[in-house]
Amino acid sequence: MPKTIIVLPTYNEKENLSRMVDELLALNIPNLHILVVDDNSPDGTGKIADEIAARDERVNVLHRKEKNGLGQAYIAGFKQAISMDADYIIQMDCDFSHQPKYIPDFLKAIESHDVVLGSRFAKGGSVDKDWSIYRKLLTWFANRVYTPTILGIPVRDATGGYRVWRRNTLIGLGLDRIRSNGYVFQVEMAYVASRLGFRIAEIPIYFPDRELGESKMDIRIQIEAAMRVWEVRQRHRMLNPQMRHKPVST
Image 1 (cartoon, rainbow, N blue to C red):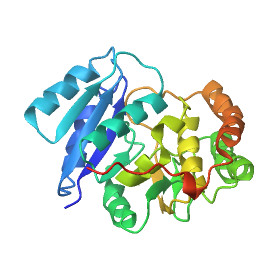
Image 2: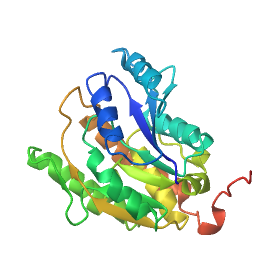
Image 3: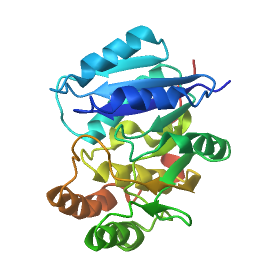
């Protein structure tokens, strides 16, 4: 039976973590595990994670000494999940903008693909109805016009962070190739996967705003991410499927 590990980065998510873990485990997916990657949250999220892990062996915690970027948190979590013999690795936020109910659909789709992306812009997907027109247009433009035009990838939602990867896909990407350390990290991962010829699927999702806690996204981060798309193209435009990293035999 495949082993699935959910990599759940946290920073000041004490209001959400326990409820998120409960909802994930309530899915009753066989051989499902959760890896909380906490960036030394000052609100005590890491302590809450340890308490949950002490009660349930399906939950593990990776403590990082400081907050130095979402990308680095995910890379650390991916490497840990690979070392824990995960077959499928899910990445998602802890703030309920990524709803657990989609995970069964993701796991069904990954059976015939190398990576599955939760997409706000695939047919049937949508964003929070209370978003401003400006925010909706900016997010749509970034994903449906700007990023695919620059990178030439057949992905409708390259900035989304709700995904499931096969173990060998993450190994094949060569995680040390990935240098982005902000929200453009998601774009870089999608671009490298596409350049290396991995099979990509998109599942439509509804993306609500977080209910509790504070958002880490602001306009400065959005502008910086847009500019760094060009760096991602320059860095990886020569990649091809023959340049995949090979899994190490055990």
